[in-house]
Amino acid sequence: MDSNRFKYELDEIPPFIDLLFLGLQWFAVIVPTVIIVGNIVAGLHFSEPADRIIYIQKVFFITGVSLLIQLLWGHRLPLVMGPATILLVGITVSRGSSISAIYTAIAMGGFVLFILSAAGLFNFLKRLFTPPVVAVILILVAFTLTPTILNLITSSSATGQALTNLCFAFVFVLSIFAVNRYVKGLWKSTLILWALIIGTLIYYLLFPHSFAMNNGVYPDILAGFFKNMNFNMSFEPGVIISFLICFLALSINDLGSIYSVGGMLKPTHMQKRVTRGLSLTGLLNFLSGLLGVIGSVNFSMSPGVIASTGCASRFTLIPAGAILVLLSFMPPVISFLGTVPQVVVGGILLYIMCSQLAAGLIMVTETEEGFNFENGLVMGLPLMLSIIISFLPNSVLNTFPVLLRPILGNGFVVGVVVVLIMEHLIFRKKKSE
Image 1 (spheres, helix red, strand yellow):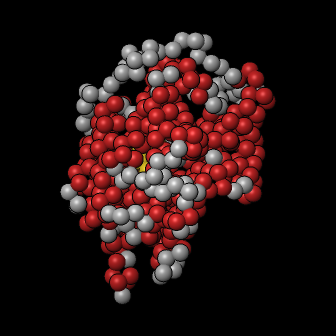
Image 2: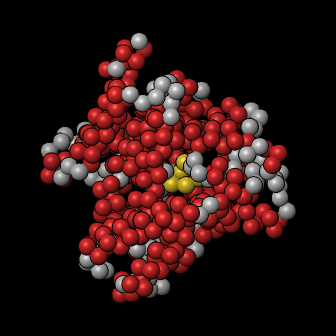
Image 3: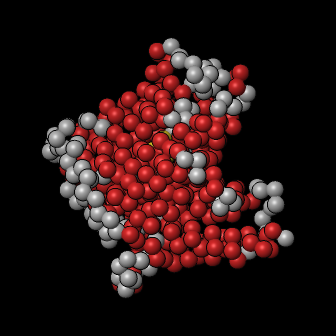
């Protein structure tokens, strides 16, 4: 779409009614990922409903604040932000470590990304990420989240029927793909939100006994929000190294998202926007670690929303960010959002990861050099190793040295390291020839 075809340009502020309406549309795009990832991580960390509500509050807060800061002082582009699924991978495989160690590692990873980006050193690392490497990283996220998806779909304390949940998830995911095949524009951009709502309603109509609220017991709006602030650092070298590799992948995701919108809108001073955007992503993840919550990243779905709405104004996302921050101080609303059944969350995550797989395959097959047998070898070994490690039983993982367990027991980290070795060492000479 040519820039002169937009109803509102990048730095143009629409009238209030249009601003609010377009902001609600952006909110509908952002909120499903916040709910899904927030629910998953809160469930991994806490058993008490009140603690889970507080954690999801923090996810809403940091997502909203990150979005507003990027719009006003960062890349200043109409880009969706949300919890980083690559950090979800790091958290799920680091459950054997303390919460303090996990979020200390996230804070350090964000700080390193901030330093590299602000100092311009990230340009040296970008050369490592060739199309096969980026494709493997995209696919690794999907593969290493498979155990989490399986657990969400099959475990249900309310029904206790794994087979029933599997059948529901199968039909549910196929239905999402069927709808996705025919809807267009904003309906396609907000499909995950509608799947979340309709899937939840259908599940509770089929299994009404599984519905459970928090019985009106909520944390205090402010005192509860600042509970468990993670200022007590816990340095575990293995966890830190694991998350540093995750942040390398996160930076590539962030970079691609910024360039995707930049290529569409052709704004001025693009390099400065990239530097500011990456630097603030690192700094905001550092603050997320201190807050004890998963960090945010720019998403690549924004061009589709811009094209469907015909609006390129970055200011239309400000109402969405403000609503996210406002909701973070409403525990009853957060509690209601937390009632989404696990099987619905797992089904939607499965749908999202299928899109991730498709993006990875497109990345490697649409290069000028084409896809050859060596590309298949470069990708095959890290993907197979990641699957093997992701499904290793705990009895095997517990035999690994404590220091190396967060690294060798992390299918994503092993996969990234192996694909870099395959691409830049083992097959380097043949590719240059």
